[in-house]
Image (tube, rainbow, N blue to C red; front, side):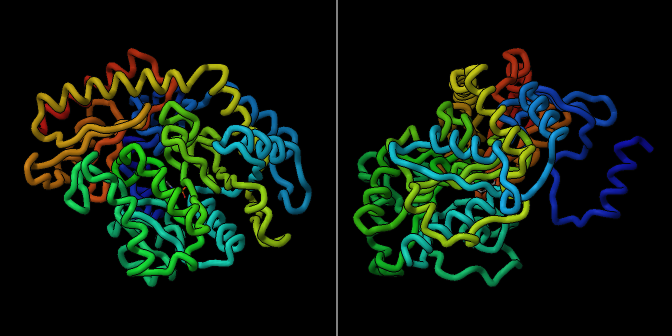
Length: 432
Ligand SMILES: Cc1ncc(COP(=O)(O)O)c(C=O)c1O
């Protein structure tokens, strides 16, 4: 038996089936945009551990910072003995997140935990309980985050009852408009629909926050029409509702701006971050207007590991790497290349129903028929498998599992990018 077969057997015997895996191999080491497995095979990484590795695997500055911190101390718990990297990173986050007002930041361990804490803060600050989320949204797997999430299988199925006081409206998903309208003649009716909800579902005075991804991540890289975020934000402002911008997947340079909401001219009240924030270490942030973040009482927020010193040092190194290596410009270049190639593939392959994206957050939605837009879920699964067999790691997305999304490290070389795209195109040719 090969080492991989041994490990797969051990995995099956010891790890429940719930935690899924996209590829059937085990990593031994990784650098930049390449992962080497335990058999010595190399794979180009178009997934980045689900959008975590924007600065690349084992980025030099990040590894050095982690090593240096590991030799000093690894944990004191910020609530017991404070440390400088937490405060320094909070200061940085307050500077780089959108919004020209005083801000404060706290740290937790995962995207879901950031979402939960953003809601705690919003509820406390407004004295209101209800939340508005969107169809096709993904906000994590803890009880409240899962409730805010829209996709039933596999995320919610069998795990109810869900948390109360979450209401939902369609996202600005033009390719599959819930109202059967077309942009721009629709005048972004889907955003105005929020006002309807205040008559049909929940009074605006009871709503603490709207929770929105600036671009849908797990929901299929859906970029809402220009003006959608602004409309939603205006409705929030009219009604004393806070706007929580969930940047867990879109953040840290993926869209060629540090935060995707910057593309849409909106200053959120609260921003949640995780994934590429700390270059692979578990860290998440909740950044918001100072007076909102300061609302909860002392001791009302926190956690044993939140803002672990290794993770904070890694995040500081990530921010430095972005500046030093000009990764926002690189995201723009990569995005343009991928978009051009995907558009060309769309001309040649009927199975591609839509190509969309912003910066280096690009996707193709696969359909069985362009007229009916019936999702091509099985075909998308086959595409992921064929890519893997040729040495390219990819992951799908979308409520119907029919979107091929691209989340490669932004340090990918031109040659690796070209090779990865060629594999994708070749594999697509076989599906069709
Ligand atoms: C937008 C968004 N919010 C929250 C989460 C949850 O993050 P985590 O898996 O770190 O809990 C994700 C994860 O994919 C996400 O994409």
